[in-house]
Image: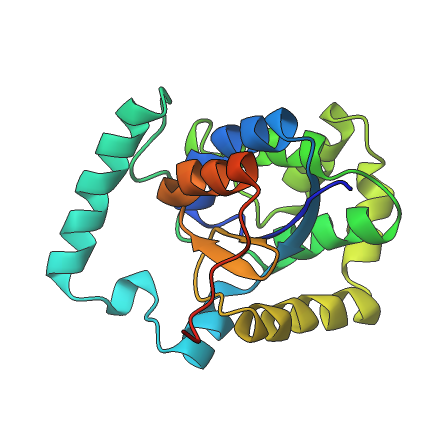
Length: 207
């Protein structure tokens, strides 16, 4: 049976970007099905006790910049630590991805372009024209998708993703949930791969 991974992320998350290629390699290696679940981080933080970046202590903000440089080297990436349009409101971009899923499109060709667009090319994902262009480059119907992204049912799915995230003990981005076991952060991808390789039973907190 094909293993499934619920992939909680936001397009505004540097860690989702940094880990995306490594995650996709694991997905390919173990032939997993990915259920993409974009989530609004601000609301998720409010639900689970986290803080948005601007409200974190300066010590934590400075350490985040160190970690981004380390993982940039570790993952072999080349990106701006402080891109021109970050932070940004990811609602439209995240709902754009949900529109792809609802209309039967694989969002991966778009995601593989959208993450670098933010962090490498410093493009603005709050602009509809940018999203349309990236979708068109991926062979997706960008203009139709942007119109779909604003629909009420898409917003409802976005809200449900937040509720599903809390129910799954998800509190940040990215989180990969395998058989009910959450792996928080792109630095847990290797542990996710280990779990897939060993085919062990999921670990639980209620021990």
